[in-house]
Length: 150
Image 1 (tube, rainbow, N blue to C red):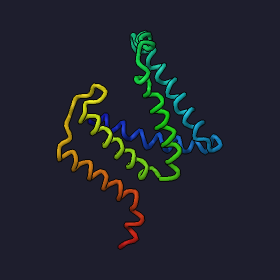
Image 2: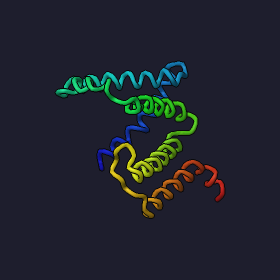
Image 3: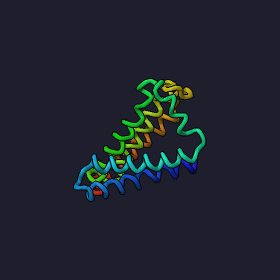
Image 4: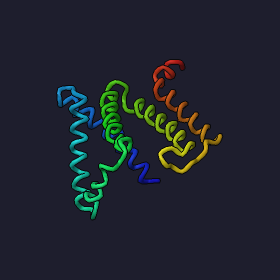
């Protein structure tokens, strides 16, 4: 669980760094996302070189159905969207929306056991948790307006 929490801290850090990089690259969101993916690809390649069989396992790639390769474009979309939206929405507002989207989508994937996941039905405590998250999204995204109501 701690590793998951730690991984979550990387997302706002990456968004802030990519947002700043975007400014240094002539405000090009695409260039900043490309640099992020390129550097990440180099790091992963070097890590794969240290793990026995990691590069050899890529030989089965041509036999994979195309849908299994969608992780790359989805990751690119995510990096692009976060880099584009961070300066427009702010990190807390943006990431509250991202987290809500992740929770709702994850609940649906788990409920139906999509992509070979273990089927975990949606039960009322999960619905309550999702509603609390959505409430948090509303508070985070409209906090300035809510503060003015005092």
